[in-house]
Image (tube, rainbow, N blue to C red):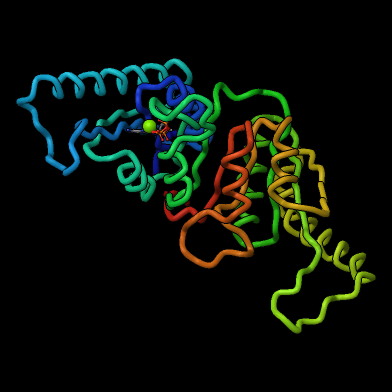
Length: 298
Ligand SMILES: Nc1ncnc2c1ncn2[C@@H]1O[C@H](COP(=O)(O)OP(=O)(O)OP(=O)(O)O)[C@@H](O)[C@H]1O
Ligand SMILES: [Mg+2]
């Protein structure tokens, strides 16, 4: 029997159905990765502007805390039904959701979140906690949208950056585990004039650009494909907007994988424009990959 050890898969719960969907997905991820599962609810006292700390004597808020303990216990039970062999812990942690989850991400192999939670307005595609944690977490984040479909490929966005190569690795692993195929999408735009006086490359060079871009895609995928011979791969080279290409490919996908930022990264930990657009506009689950700081070999 394989023992689930090392950095956990962490899932955030807020009592919503969307978070419970995320728990089921997180349990399967933990099982596959041989990691423990940690279910976390960030609890803050309602209607307080300043951080007043715990107020155990206040009957009303104490009731809310009991409620939080209850839905964490319910989430632990739900995970146990999906993956009985995965060790699961539940915790109610004092603090606002985003900082608590970002803190959890420091020691996590993966953070899993629902696309929505209890708040927000009808029609909102993605909640604010999920946006903020996806943008700043120090480990990969998987955003779940309902009970995931079991058909359709895994789609990965490739731009040749180091991080997109990690995204390819993540995507192969997910495709292998799900027994499905992989679509590797690389979209490229015409070279642009970046500053006044720059020479516009002649249009006839476009064929050469296309060849270069084809090479970027092939080289980004090649090494991984050898390690996952069971995963069939389709290369999708698109002359056009990367965000639009990924959003289109995501329609039939069971998962879209992107790096947190790409070749255009200005540094820092925030999301690149393609990852941002994909997170906000796809209807499928999205994995945002960044360099794992923990977990390897631990
Ligand atoms: N207090 C919390 N503790 C732990 N995880 C949370 C908490 N709040 C939200 N989450 C996680 O984030 C996901 C998305 O919830 P989020 O709060 O971002 O959306 P929302 O409630 O629909 O909108 P709003 O931005 O108005 O809060 C949830 O499914 C859950 O996984
Ligand atoms: Mg919320």
